[in-house]
Length: 134
Image (cartoon, rainbow, N blue to C red):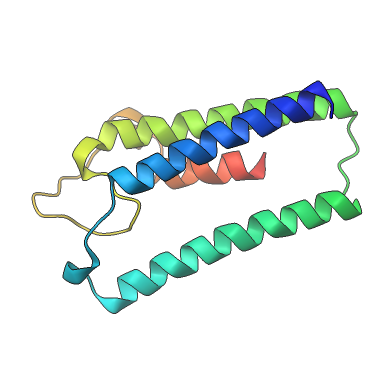
């Protein structure tokens, strides 16, 4: 295994651990939510897992190759990954107690318009999409 692959593996393991910790810390009680909210959460997770499996299949089979040399491509992807996660966790930090891994409006909800929300309406999702694209 090359050093770049080891670095990717370590970063992905750290990221996975951070996401699991975030999900557990901000877990909501589904007894107060509708069935459609619970179903939409499952659809979201199934979509993420399916996308990751498809990405591994595409990588393994060599489909959709990117015509850039290996090391510059990996450095660009690592920068994208880091920037995406920075955006995501900046948004999570800014929301504080209002952040949940589920889409819902909480009591005493307030619209946040500073921090990363000054430029992007959904920076946590945008950051996650950027990281996954990397």
